[in-house]
Structures are given as C-alpha cells and as structure tokens.
Image (tube, rainbow, N blue to C red):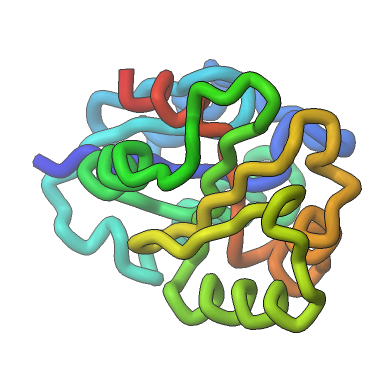
Length: 179
C-alpha cells in the first residue's frame, strides 16, 4: 500500500472554505484508506494499493470531486510520502534561520518547475532576498520573513500561469504532514 499526500491549492483563503472533516470524508468516499487531514491548509494524507493514484487520471478524478463537492476550481499536486520526506530532508537552506521563511514549491511536473525557474532567471532575482534552488520534484525558496508576498519571486509565483500547476508549503507544515 502506498501512502500519498494531496496538496490542495487555494483552500481556506480567498473565500474558498473547505472543512477538514468534509475533506477527509470526500477522500474516503473516493475509496482511499487511512485518510487524515493536517492543518487547515489543504493537506490530505491517504493510502491506496492502486499504483495509478499518481497518474493524471487519478489527479483529475480527485480534482473533479473536490470541485463538485466544494464549489471551486480545484487544483492539487500528488506526492508519495517518500517524495515528500525527500523534499523535506533535502531543503538546501538553513531551516532554523528565524529571519527566513522556508518554503517548498511543488509542481505538477518537472517541466512546470523548470519553466518557473527560467522565468525567475529572466527577472533577475536578488539571491540574498529571494534565494531559490531546484530540488528533485520541487523548488526551494527561502525569503526574508515579512517579504513573502512582495519579492519578485513571490509575484512570479502568484501569476495565473502557475495557479493550476503549483502549490507551496512552509517546511514546518510539511514536517507536520509527515508527523
């Protein structure tokens, strides 16, 4: 049985309210086992013996069910527990630096993340303010606290182009998801 994590984008912000109990119930109705939600930021841990869960068809099925149930245009990124563990352990910056916010950006494909990094190169980021690094299946970002909506990378990440294909989580949240 494989343990999966669905990372939902844009829930419990901007008028989209998804209650954890209802979210877990939906995943159970979809036939998944061991369902639990973590925090109220759209993190669902579940198990399945279906190896195709990570396939685009399963992702689409989950997104469709979320959209139908909660009335919003749902986007998710699916990762295995192993992939998430690796992303957390490989964080390349000082995760204990209290002056920084450690973020991990997940993409629906490596090509999307490569495109994001190419666009970031094109805007000339200041590595001291907006440090980013490519990881396996993720992009790491470690901005100064209080700047996470104002930096050039934050503005790039917020563009409509990346809305259906990326989601980000604070490293501390990911550690709780793995908990």
